[in-house]
Structure formats: C-alpha cells, structure tokens
Amino acid sequence: LFGNKLYVWIRLGILMKNILLFPIIFAFIFSACSDFSGNEDAVEASLKPGPVTQQQQEEEEEEEEEEESVSTRTYHHLYGVAFGNNTFVAVGAKGTVRTSSDNGSSWDNGTSGNSYYFDEVAYEDSTFIAVGQYGRIYTSSDNGTTWSRSTWNGSTAGLTGVASGNNVSIAVSSSAVIKSTDNASNWTLKNSAVEVYDMAYGHRTASGKVATCGTITHGGDHDDGTYTSVALSGGSGSGAQATVIVSGDNVTSVSITDGGTGLYQIGDVLTIDNA
Image (cartoon, one colour):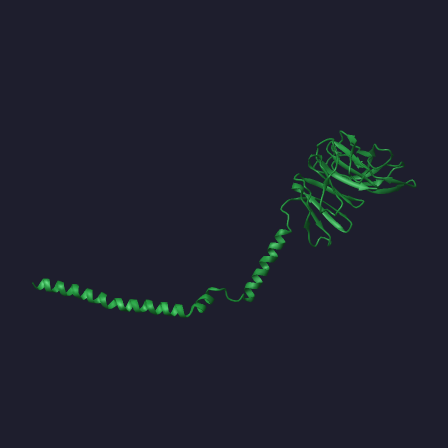
C-alpha cells in the first residue's frame, strides 16, 4: 500500500509540474510575438546591409582593377610585333592580335577571325600584314582592330617571315618566297624550293646606287660562331658580303656589310656561301 501511494504522489507531482510550465511557456511565446509585431521596422532594418566601410570599398576597387587587368591579358604566346601609324600590333598563337596606341602601356584585343598561329607581322602603307600557319595571310587597315584574309593559292607551308617596303611585300616559308605589289591583297610565287625563315627590308648605298636588300636563305653546314665577310651569291647584283652568326645549326643573324657592285632588287634570294 505504501508503495502504491508513493507512486500516486510521484505521478501527481509530474502532472502538476507540467501544468505549471505550460502558462510560463505560453506567456514567453506571446511576449516574443508582441515584441516582433511591434518592431517590424527594426527587424526589417536589421536584415538590410549596413553602410560600406572604407576597407570594403578599397577591396571592391582592387577586385575591379584585377578583373580589368585580367580582361586585357592574353594567355597565348606572341611571336611578332610591328609599328605603324602610331600603333603597335603584336600577333601570336591561335590568331591572337594585340594592339597598343599608347607606346605599349595598355593593350586591346583585335579580331583576326583566324584560329591558326601568326608568326610575324609587318606594316606598309597604312596596312598591317600578318602571316603564319598553313600559309595564311591577313591584313588590317584599321590599326589591327579587324582583319581580312588575303589571296594566296600556293603552298600551305607556314609563313614565318614578312617584310614590306617601297610598296612591295615579301613573305617567306620553308619552301617558298612570295611577293605582293598591291598592298598585300594578292600574292604570287617568286621563288620555290628554298629554305627561308625570316627577312627584313632595308637599303644600302653601293657604287653610287641604292641596293635593296633581298632575302637570305638558311646557311647550315657551319659550326656555331660569328663569320665575317661571308660571300652572298645569287640575286640581280653581285659582290655582296655579310656577317653571319650561327647558333644551334641555325643562322640566327645576317648583317650585310658590303652591298656589292650591282643593284639588288626586292625579292632577290641570296645564298650564304657554305665553303
């Protein structure tokens, strides 16, 4: 009997405890609801962002500057650059074209419409000329902003060099020398089966005449080093000599030191004496 009474009192105590807790919990919920309904503006305001601090503003400006600098980058290699009409134009892999009109301080993207490599670029008569992979030639008359493809139906060997001067443009590859006289719009084969990788335009006075430097073919068969008074054969002139630098079985530099006694024409192919 004692045990039963104890059990009853314990159960009654738990019941009374729950009855007492209920009005306390209810009163707390009601009070919280009253406070919320009476301070809706304050709650709403607390959900809005506070004023931007000076540090946050500086961080945002730094992020914007970084994004801007990223947008002016190129992630492709650049292989050639030329200057004309107060503009630098650089070309490279995947048809990449970059232009700068403030002496290289900042650069913009041009649109070449070409997905192949550009290896070199030249400037002549308000026109930039870019040459590269698969014998492709593109020209731009708006300082490198837009480009159009020129007509060349010959070899698809990659064009690795181009130079312009005196209203004539010459482009070279590992198997051909091609020439244009209409501002690089159309091209014709000048020489074939020659191994030429680069060229430059210039002029030199010899015997009272202006000798126009032509193309110089790959030499080879020489040990690395600097060779002076190297005889150059071929072309429309005669007697030309040059200083030749060979490195890694390749001719890396050719400087004409004697223009000879005849008149060399643009497009002349001069061969380095391998003796």
